[in-house]
Length: 129
Image 1 (cartoon, one colour):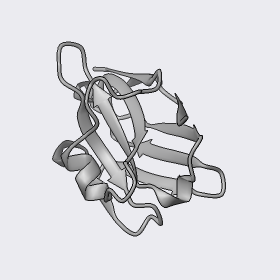
Image 2 (cartoon, helix red, strand yellow; image 1 turned 90 degrees about the vertical axis):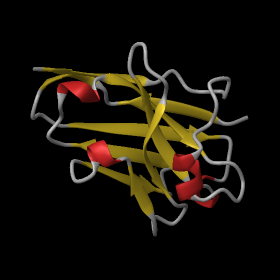
Image 3 (cartoon, helix red, strand yellow; image 1 turned 180 degrees about the horizontal axis):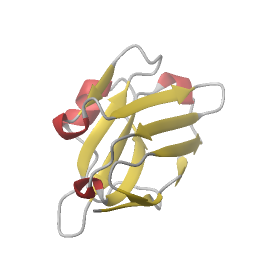
Image 4 (tube, one colour; image 1 turned 180 degrees about the vertical axis):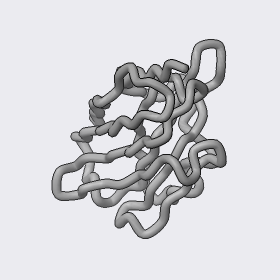
């Protein structure tokens, strides 16, 4: 069974930075595309960024392009999201998820897992103005 643990969230002022981490167990991490997703209160979960298994391809939603950087360390089964120049509208619960077998990073971001997916507990990011 796949298990993910997200960490690194917190309260920061606008313009600040945070680095999120996601440690994964229960699958061959280096065989799967991974993604970061977020859900703000009253809104649907959205894809933030996705990365292919060997880090050759990355994808970002328009609102974070140029500010966020996704990366992974396959030797540590860990996914990262470096978030710079944070804005109040980045405030949300952030989750990570693995793609299904054979699913590309592009497809993972285009069609995020459904709400009844076995999501982790997430990590809260709050950006004050």
